[in-house]
Length: 460
Length: 63
Image (cartoon, rainbow over all chains, first blue to last red; front, top):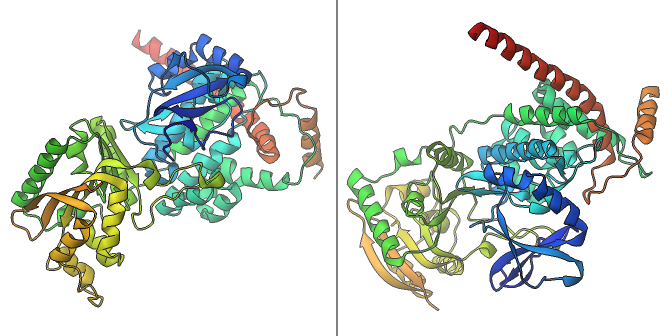
């Protein structure tokens, strides 16, 4: 939850420190138990190296009263990530980039005499399309001979979901919603096709690794960690890197990836729609935009190109993948594409249902785009218009919404093979339902189209 | 079976200092890491030397 003060509920597992908010600003308390590692992080040059490469979130030291003085060593203020996303919301390449960044960081850290003590996918966030590590307290001094303590976690958080997405089905990263500490390797191994054994790195780091875990599952006597020399560790990291790199997925044949070639807008209609949206953006000047059902992000870019932090949600992993690949190719900023099923958006998960926020808890956005969306929610998912309006009012202040009437060809397609039980789906009913929670500011019919764009403001 | 006990014994004897991290590395994962890291470390060393060798000859050809 976005509280304005107090310790973040996700920040309890690592005794090295924790995140807290004070008067809306995010800080990290570093505990005395982590002092040596923190000093080494800075004095070894690792912090500067990683920040310079854009791999670690920069921070500044601040002189404020600690949140828990009895354990405090110092307080830092990390640069703010505009939107926190989770691995079950990432497309294939986002997940792959996050995995490779984690390995790159571990390799660089070893060169400075430090190591990552965890390899959680939740430590990676996306800033202007690039993966960045956000947990400054994840580094510890590497004692010669020590194995990589996060090897298991890396395989569960990154390698297993990537392998399942590449070898079996792109949707299987949704398993991360169920398993907060990564996909159990025995489950990944049983779901992967037999041909994945032919990839020696998959065989080694997933299948055989899972068997080793099963073999020693009942070992409860104290095991001293085995000795692994530096070269062996670098070999392990190199092998994991090649394992991740060998996995590919090509977005083809899904429903939405070809959407823009199939819409019923004329070129003039599309241009008019863009002009109207730009007019709304210039009128409201929001700081954040959520584009719901963004497809490959054509309209999201109207906002992000104006320097507005924009999240482009779509249910189709192929659209999100294409959107992300475009961002990387063109070095675009301010845009974050994410996989989201709006009929079942990300819930709050983890301990006390408070470790990872739901989609709603990460809002509200200053402005929400709901373009060519309403018919999917009202007709495909049978949500009454009143409830759609109430939901939108919870996630935004300003709403740009497009009403798509029943005689629109896209709506006709939705109704082609089912009984039309939606007698209440009319423009009047739409205006009445939304008028109950929003004030109408503008109403613009789109050229060459039966559709209408509205700018609304949530009533307070 | 004998090899398994032998490996397990080797692991027990390995290093006296305990891991300081808060994360549970998992016994099976640690043992597996030790086994694969030996092979991967050797392969990595060869790879590094091989690329150095290639660079050397490439350099000679260009010189």
